[in-house]
Amino acid sequence: MQLNSSDQFYFYQSSIGRLEKLVMKYVLTDITPTPGFVTNAFGVKVNPKHLPLVVGDREGVEAPPIPANWHADLAEFGAALRALDLARKKFTVVELGCGWGCWLNITGVVARQKGLDVTLIGVEGDPGHVQFAHEALTENGFNSGDYVVHHGIASWQEGHALFPIQEHSGVSWGLEARFNVSDDELVGLLETGKYMHLRQIPLSSLLPQDCDHIDLVHVDIQGAEIPLIPASMEFLNEKVAMVLIGTHSKQIEAALFDSFLSFGWVLEVERPAVLSVGRKLHTKVDGVQLWRNPRLLHDSNLPLCDPEDYAGNLDVKSIPESVSADQKFSVEVIISNISQKNWNGFGECPIHISYHWRSDSGEIIIFDGIRTNLANNFIALNSNVSQMVDVVAPASIGIFSLELTLVHEANIWFETADFDSCIIKIQVCE
Image (cartoon, rainbow, N blue to C red; front, side, top):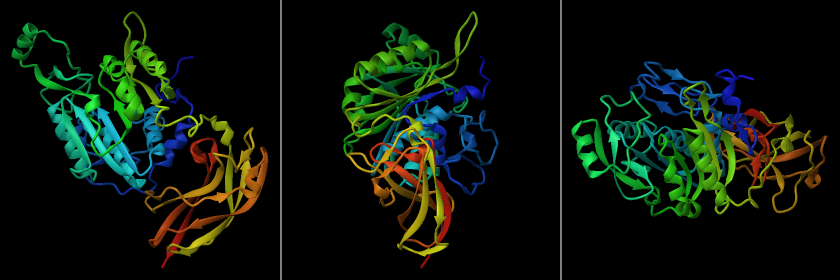
């Protein structure tokens, strides 16, 4: 079977449920467009001058990237948001080959909406792209204390390498560094005016002093993933929770499997690189791999799950039209378990009822709602349960969206799997 250009982006493997639901969890429902910018579905402003050949002179608000947008697909968006889902209190991300700071901005904006403190670190070789990243981060509301963008080449060791010079930044995003150039060759290449001499920045040097670990390392360095990843495994094992890699060939994908699997990492999302076949093979679309480090995110706290284990829905029977700020109130719900497993509300990782609050524009203002125990701490498979759920209203007044859902503690929010949560608008008064 041959997949068309749209279907190929649904062709991914995931151990964490349907990525469409995970992406939609963070999509804002009401975004005010900013003149002169394209705003993506997560509220990130993209300056068209940074991507003249891709964005052009477009303005307005983009649709959710399902199955993809001009930059990335479900697998990559879902993988990046997975790292955010697991972060608590603070989110630290490193983007190698950051360009205009795409994933710094996307994960940073969503993390901020989730109420997390952010530390954003980029490495980029093109000086114009470094400037673009500074501009984009500022345009999206980050200050100089939130981020740092290094001008250099992501590497596994100290040293210097050559990086191509392009006449106009923003035209080419696939520039490849040249490593291990001999002294004789180096002089000749620099004299051509086509290369600059840049320092190599080891991945292990990027951990900020005030951080004990990095939540996500995003790698897109145009084929230089090898030997960077194999040579950096000691640091990754000790200090990095998740690694998201854009792969550029089947050979690189195979080498990454060898490196991560040999140290017990868990592959949570994978979409293979898409090739143009025939006499000459080339990669049409980069692949995606998301790896979880069980040393920092242990299996016992994050058991792998089948999304069908969470199949079901939640409906509201009665709910007040308005509540007071900070008021605790009750909602009557009906919960249906149509999965193939019983849902238990006891043990080390119980299932509870909870909720998220979003502003009228869709921004998450309260992510972890208070918990309500399941009636009798149990919902049998293929059964319905009616019960009351406790909710605490936001502290500010206005119109808010309440999303009622279930959570398997230290595991998964049901709405990211095969579960239909319930979203209702409520007026919060003084």
